[in-house]
Length: 482
Image (cartoon, rainbow, N blue to C red):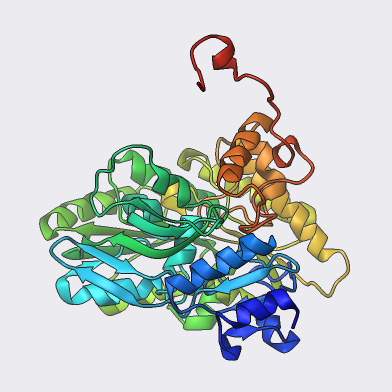
């Protein structure tokens, strides 16, 4: 062990300082397994103070680092930096405080998403963001990528439910962002941190907002003979004035995979399924359910089912939540995309994805949060067949460009990571990217925190700031640094 690593050995016992090839292998990639890198070492802190000491070691020796939770990132966001350090946070998995009166939970970053709701359930409360990976994904990872989930249509993303965070900056300074209050004073530094993909430091403590559990659910499963009809039905539901808790679509490939995996009882002849869920107080839900029934009946659905009890509701959602992993039954490899389009353009986007699938000769399974236009096309390929990975990546790029062209975004909740950084210029100008880099370098001039992620290489955004000399506002006499 070299002298620098020996210093880490004074912080961590041998079982929490991993340096052998066999120990490092599980950390070489996240859920986007097409990218792999070998870290110098992996450390497994159990306290915030150990994280501070580790980041200080990285700053002192100029070693890049990546914070990692469960490794469920689908964009290469928690891919190790070659020769850098992985700081694994799974052992920092405690619920520090739960206050049902204030409706807050304070957790460490390795605390599992679903466990927040489990802990809050005895008080009639729950944590709203529900990514499909919620049984395994950590709050720290959700924070890094501003994760959403099926119910983000009504309740928003992680950023809408995080009140505060204790953060270790890349120079090892510890800062408190946000507060327990719903109203913050001054610049929204917490909003800047959430979704920054680990480029601005490591959260070691997170304060979450809890909500009362809905009194009643009304879950509808509608089957369509075309994906376009299902997409147009989403726009019809929104146009009707309803605000469901969730609206999800699965196409025939996703239906086939989910049915094989969990036997949810989906109609196997459907080209698309639409799941719509209303939730809230019983009188409100009952009134909205009648309205929703009329909209769905007029949307061209050939079969409509309404969950009669909690078990039927759970079965419908089990199929949807299992869809990503279940697609592995249809193909040895697949890429998961995560673009966003306006709801009114869903039908158009799905038709074009179908055309691109035929053009590239690769199957695409569509599973997505239809309510906010967040597409999740899963591109199926076989990595053992020469050129198929490259074809899949090219098709993924076409889909991202399609989303931007329709007025959407290259990512909804999976982050940019490694996979999408080349497409950042499709959304942002060089000046935009340069400003983002200037903000990042103000905190991390050596780019140690998750180096190489999010920003495209070989552009002005990754070099020195494009503007030198006085700022234009200084030249105009409107701003002074004195």
